Length: 110
Image (cartoon, rainbow, N blue to C red):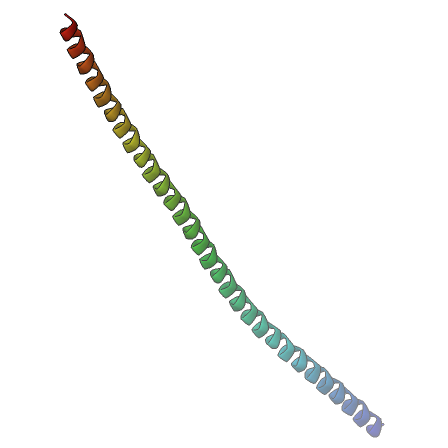
C-alpha cells in the first residue's frame, strides 16, 4: 500500500513537472511571438512612414509641374499679349501714316 502511494505520488509529480515544462514552453513561445509582433509592427510603421514620404514627394513633384506649366502658360500668354500690342501699335502707326498721306493728297488736289 505504501509503495502504491509512493508510485501515485511520483506519477503526480511527473505529471505536474510535464505540465510545468509544457506551460513554460508555451509561455516562452508566446513571449517570442509577442516580440516578433512588436518587430513587425515597427517594420510596418517604418514602411507606412516611407510610403507617406514618397506620397508627399510625389505630390510636391506634381504640384511643381502644375506650377511650372502655369508659369509657362502665363509667360506665353504675356508674350502673345506683347505681340498683339506691338501688332496693334504698328497697324495704328501705318494707318495713321496712310491717313496723313491721304490728307496730303487731298490737300494737293484742292
